[in-house]
Amino acid sequence: MTRAAEKPGIHMWLVLMKAHRSLKRHAERSIQALDMCLSDFAILEALLHKGPQSLNELGRRIELTSGAMTTAIDRLEARKLVARGDHPTDRRTWVIRLTQPGVALITSVFSSHEAAMERAMSGLSKSERDQLIELLKKVGTTAEEQLTNNNEKPTLKEGMKP
Image (cartoon, rainbow, N blue to C red):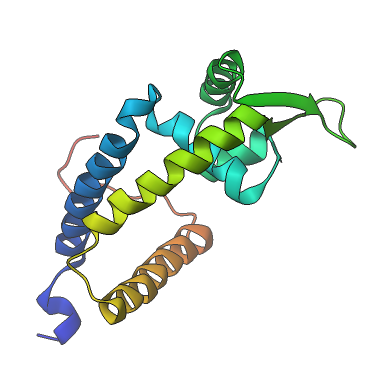
């Protein structure tokens, strides 16, 4: 048995999913007191670190559908944390930006969120973190390339019903 086959891909996926679940719970707990959900936090964080963006670009970045994005932006706009503005070249598109209260809120909240995620990752040394980041990037890149290059639909094993 080859070394790569010692831990099958399905086992690696399960370990990643369990780790992701635990880390997501840490993230959700760290923003719980803000009276907002993880997707609202993700929108504010993306705007803080990436600047104003179109609704579609922001939705792709945080992986929300256009309907979910519109609902989230409505919520954040009602709280006066974001504002919609005209796109400079496309009249059909809104650009979403943080307002001053939005900047103040996400800046203060992000530091406590960052500290919570630091605690969640405290079991790894700096070199282990660096190594894990590189390995996860490699896994993600390889998986994405396979999705992009292989447009075949998965097939069912013989004898299985759809």
